[in-house]
Image (tube, rainbow, N blue to C red):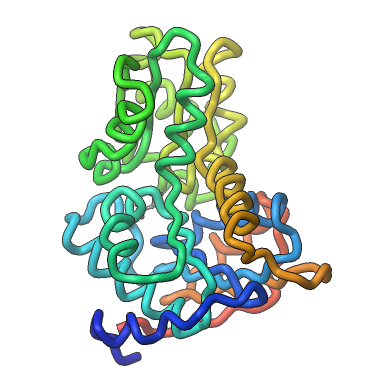
Length: 282
Ligand code: DGL
């Protein structure tokens, strides 16, 4: 498809209408964790989800590249009439949210601030662990969002690059994944974290195993769940909630075929997909 210029794209931001779909995007299929949370809280909303499966992963890419990809996807979602955009990808939220907000007039929501706010509410000792991709951790976006709310909180951040491929292989509950998690999480556990933020789309699929490794005294904060709650509040306050009470539909757009992971993630998350389209974005 032909790329929009930034000037052209701003012309596409027509007045919002509550019955338009929510646009959600991610580097790939992992952002369906956010869709599943949106479904639980907003069952009547239509959702159009773009997974950039041709260019996943974003987690090891430069900030400039992630920003460029994010602008291309936001333009596309506007062409599909999105009334708001949810950046399900933590890496794109960390690196592109503020620029996208400055370009477009529709509401744009990321996953970092809701996750940070939930972690600040949850911690008792004031020691929070954050795990994510290399790019998310290097951006310090979670650290800044947490310190904005609670300057004295200690934030220990750790990149966990092996977790995304393990999830994409469907090893949600596997001994190898457990060993990798132990290796990544031990340093933070030994420094006394009492709260752990799952700062990546894929990690909620490992919740069971992560809970086993961290034990009962550390609270898990799921960015996807907290993002969905924040979107629900936003739609209500901006009078943007869909008027019809029929169940919402889910249209998944992918930039390359990724059927295996798409279906294993949809099954694990218990969401049904109404339509899948493969398209070229650039
Ligand atoms: N969606 C990415 C995130 O949440 C994980 C996968 C990737 O590296 O692109 O950060």
